[in-house]
Length: 194
Image (tube, rainbow, N blue to C red; front, side, top):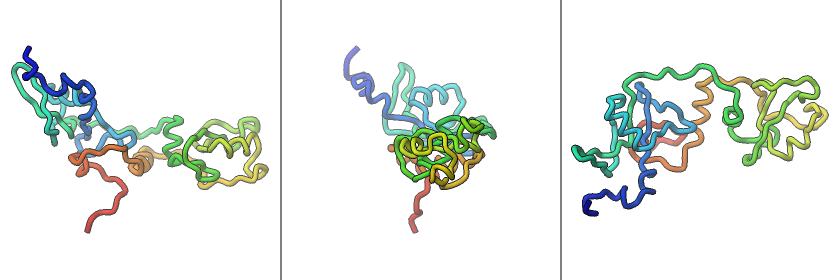
């Protein structure tokens, strides 16, 4: 095969990863904000070919087969509505997201762990209402002591978040890369131009 017929994708395989598609539910809202609902371009092309999505926006790059040429989708919308989950799983990631990735004792961001407000040694359970994100120094300082004995206080009381609350918190953490064609479908906490 002559090299002139090959796309830049074949010559530069790393370019294959550079064209993610934003996936919207049938109501034109992202399936998730954090992490942002993205598909590799191959999945978006496959879903379009199988008539599972509508292509809303495209990149300038194209992919070719022997019988067709297709611009790579940058935004796709599902044809069938996917009902969002109502129940929020109790996971480390969701806990950190609820607490906005900061220590609930001192407010520090960065390397976090979690802490039982009522220590397990004193009968505390592992639940939304008793576990918070904590930095290492605060977690060590508190140890198996109560809040009163440790001298620490909580920035906000721990509680189980709703799925909608977590989605809204996720909007505060946009990914490092946002393609221009996605902006009309993302509602980040940004000031609107007058």
